[in-house]
Figure 1: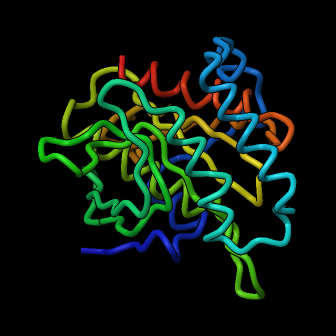
Figure 2: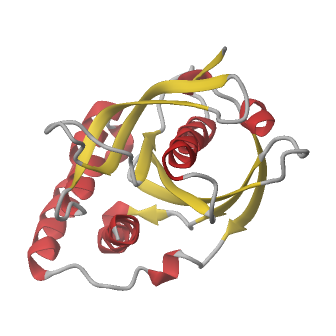
Length: 225
C-alpha cells in the first residue's frame, strides 16, 4: 500500500493517479451562480466585510484569517442538513491501484453524517494557503483531496456517469474555485481516471463577498440536489 499525504502531495503524484487536463479560467459553471443572497445574509456580509477591511487581511496570520474571513462565509452557505466543517480528515483508497490518500483539509461544506456532529462526503473542499518561508502552493493539496472525494464517490456509486467534485483555495481574502469532472477510462488505459479542471477567476472578499456566497450556495444546492 502506497500512502500519499495531502500535506506533501505534488502535481506529479496526482498525475500518476489521474490523467489531468485543464480548461483554464472559465465562465462556466461559475456564471450559473446568479441567485442573490437574501437580505439577512446581505446584512451579515456587510458586517463581515466592514470588519475585514478594518483588519487589514494581508497582515493577519492564517488562523485569524480563517476565523474572520473564510469560515463565516462557509457558515452562510449552510442549508438544510448541509454544514460548514473545519479541520476535516480525508482518507480514500484508489479503486484502481494500491494508493491511499489521507490528511486534513482546512474546511468543507458537507452533509451531516449518520452520526450527529460528523461530516459525510464533502461537496466542497477548502484549503487555505499557508504563509512563511516554508509556504507551499496549496493547489496540489486541494487537488489530492478532491481526488480522494472522487474515489469515495466511485466506491459508493460505481463508475456509471460522470463524477464531479468542487474545491477552493484561499490566499488572504482571495478565493479561487475549481470543479473537477472525472470519467473512468477503459481498463487497458492507465491511469484509469481522467479529470478535467475548470478554474474560476479570483474573487476578492472585501469587494465581492456576495459573489463568493452565490458560488458557495450554488455548489451546495447543486451537490445536495
